[in-house]
Length: 447
Image (tube, rainbow, N blue to C red; front, side, top):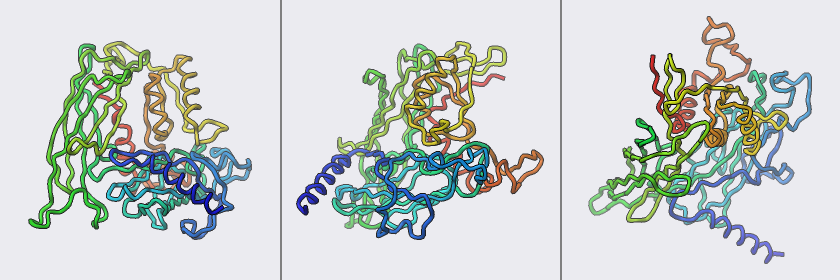
């Protein structure tokens, strides 16, 4: 039995090691094999906690939709008369030792509503908005080892009700990701794409790439070593190649730049790429390219980043209406909420694909996300199907239904986002814009 256990451990480590290849960026999904407890406990983040009786499940997960209907539920009818409350999630992962010196980020695409996160019993952060993508730099808390595990614990509080005018769900109801990068890396949401010129003859694309090099914490994990003889930080020559790739895998445009980076510094690299005779994105022909950014030192790739991109020209004209690539287009849209009815708020991508395809077949070409940011995959599907999106950040600010009243304790829902708005709106709005900015192309407004 002992030999079988050792064999199982080795096979597990080998499989994990294959997923953590040294070199370029690793972006790994962490949805599988979580533990869940649908109640509150003290010390749910402790490594030695006995969680054998906790439920085993995969994410995304909405525990509200699994519950029983109750006419006296505190969420009332807007919450579907379903249970809310507090829940705990736990997971263990191995990050092999060859990743020492790299940066490690933990990303949540949505946790409803109020979450606290621990890594190896260390409190990492707190986030109140259930519809936002947020992430933490967890490098300093990680144990890099082939045998030692790292624990992740999440406490989700959704007990203050009613918190919305519609069904929210409860839990980690969107994907979770682990990202590992070189100390020299492209920042999170660090590539900004703009297309000032788009027509059938050519498309001009401006690229801004934020690149960082450094270490955290300030111990032995340096990107390149200190020159102790001169007591100065060493600079190295880096190369950034940005390629535009069509849907056949061919490179149709490229920019290359070589620059000097010193340890513990940050730079914004600007590039321009011209694409001849581009395929234009439209509702009838939603053609998408990929913008592939490759960062290297001495011909060794240290980080990569891919962004989808559609070339289109939008113009709002009071006499002609909306013009897409100089052609008039009437928007025929619907308002959608983030849930999928009886499936709750943890919506599988295949359901969104089915739903959006049916809407497209009915003649719909625009979606309003009512009234919050959706999961990132939703926008990918809309881009690929040829659907415009009116993206919304919030349903309420710090005002109540009385439009003349400000700084109100009432809000639209008694325990809604208005309670956090003043402290958090800039952070949430910044995350909202940065995550989806490359979907928002230049719009020419004629008044």
